[in-house]
Each structure stands twice: as structure tokens, then as C-alpha cells.
Length: 100
Image 1 (cartoon, rainbow, N blue to C red):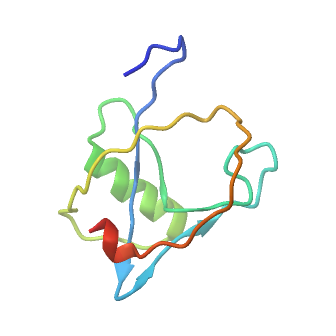
Image 2 (image 1 turned 180 degrees about the horizontal axis):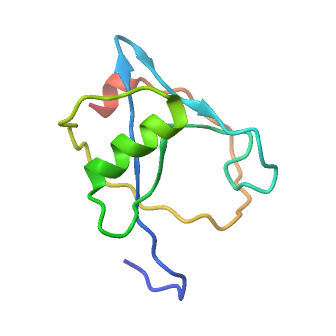
């Protein structure tokens, strides 16, 4: 991992799939939020002493009012930063099945 002088924070995202559908949340409350206007999966920061699975269950409940049954199936890790960036190009569609 690159040391950029910023504090590293850990969190979780939980993707709930039902058939071909995936639950996503539209972030539209706070215009200063770097995810404002985006569709994102439920998730958030891991609290001190909390496991990733406990965080995923807690954040999912907080953000959707739905209870998930444990155990969850970990599918990987994602690293990103929240520094505001400008991107070029055009979004492209992809087949979700290609990600499995």
C-alpha cells in the first residue's frame, strides 16, 4: 500500500443480491459528501474492537433497517481514497456476471 501521509480507515460494503438485482443506496443528503449523488452499497467504518462481519451487519441495519443473517460471504477487498478527483472518459456498462 502507498504511504500518502493520510490516516488509513477500514470499513465494509455489503452487497445484497436478489436474483439479478443488487441493493444500492443513493447518497443525496450532504452535498459536501464525496459520494454525494452516487449509488453505493450499504456500509461504513469499522468501530474499534469490531470485526468486519459485525461492522457489515451493523451498518446494513443502520442504513436499510433490514437485518441480515450471519454468516456473510466475504468476496474480496477494495482499496480507495476519498480525495476529490476529476475523471475523464465515458462510463461503460458491464455484465455483473463477469465479476463473479
